[in-house]
Image (cartoon, rainbow, N blue to C red; front, side, top):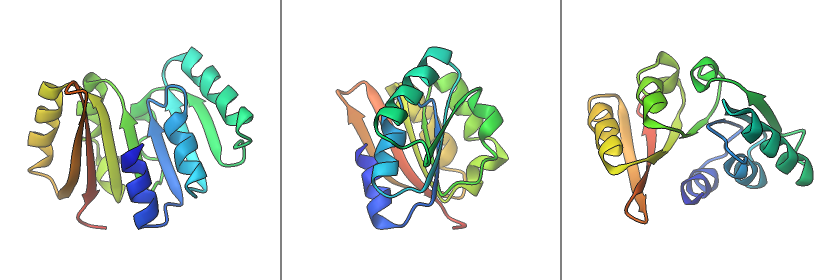
Length: 150
């Protein structure tokens, strides 16, 4: 959430893609920070039901669209910010997909230390700048970055 706040206060974020939305907390945070459109995607049907309930409870139906589906199938969605809080098995494919580099900002989270290292090593050879890294409780890792062509 700290990374989303940092991006949304540094620049106006019109559209966000939230892959692995879970309960929708990050999608809601972005919408509350001014993001006009959020596509919140999760493969787990119960997660999307929970997210939709949370979106309705917060009266954000006009700003957040909740979709039950695979993250990889939504990477072409045009967005200023990509947030992926997702398992490494999916994350490793997302960062290699052409649509990844089309997003000016990205936040990658939910990775164990060894997985975050692999993602960092891969991104070191890509046209991106890593702006910050966080390690919550020493186990879960988050990367905030920006693509260089934006």
